[in-house]
Length: 140
Image 1: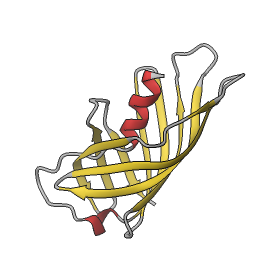
Image 2: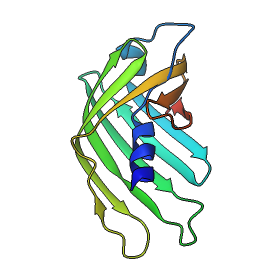
Image 3: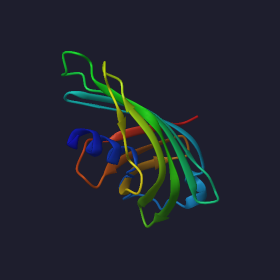
């Protein structure tokens, strides 16, 4: 369960911009993101709206598991940009384990903070505050 929460936190995180400022309007739109590290791979589609709301559709796989456990679902809530950090408050979530006999997982009422480490109009790299690996996102 801890691995799931750390990986979810990565979805919600941003990256560190040493070279340029990013505005909220720069992030508005749809992004396709992926991240892979030891034992875990993740893909997600993130939509940032200019009204401060977000929606995420995601799938994670635990590649070191013999029965290919994973989790997939959706999240939505409110987001804001503070300096180079994306702050997200999950208001609604629907997620379930993909393994045989998997059940529902609650992700609501969680807050994440991510740092934007690289950004241009079509690509960004995000790092979660929890120290998980980088997530690379491309504009859709």
